[in-house]
Length: 283
Image (cartoon, rainbow, N blue to C red; front, top):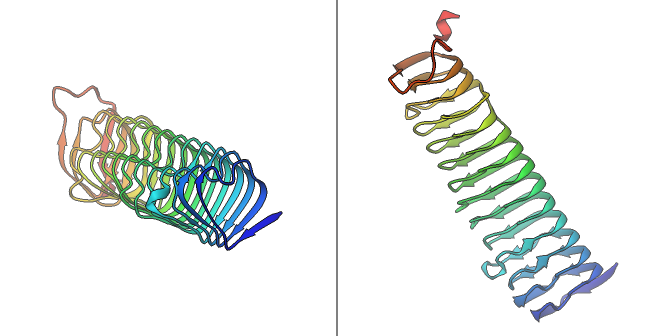
């Protein structure tokens, strides 16, 4: 493997088409597409300042690096990335990618990040300002995740999340086959129009959660007092280890909780004796 060490590059495509290349303590200055159409690239302790440095790359490792705000849209249309111990200050990262492994990565400006990505494996990642995160992605595993940003995980499928804190309005809309373990989800309108969403030992906050869902499962979860008007038009099997402020027009299934405030069944209800609502004391 060729090694380039302690050098600086700028302008357009300075390392275009490189193969089997290791970069050590390299700076990529303002310009575009520094490593476009490359393969088998290792970058260690490098600084990326220019736009689009890794486009159409197959096989690359990024360790102890910095992507400044100028390196926006840095990793698109690429395959087989391993990124560790890296600071990503650039927005709009990771698009149209297959095979992403992130470990100990900090992303303070995660706007429109991780779109149309597949086979993603994430551990110990902190991401902020992350509106429209994970749009249309699939086959994702996450363990150790802190997120601030709305409209996340929309239209995703085959997702497993563990040990996460997710601050997100309108999270998990239109998803399929999502399971979340031992996590806290804070935000309004959680999981609307989802299919096969499963929440296990999770804490949930925010108004009108889990409406218009199909095959919804909650196992030993807690709902905060602001979780009102829950489960409207949803097929749900829920065991809730807290009081529930209010339930509105659930469609089918069984809802168990420590206690219930308001149970609303009005003229808009589609259910006809299809829902069981029971307190845990009655079991």
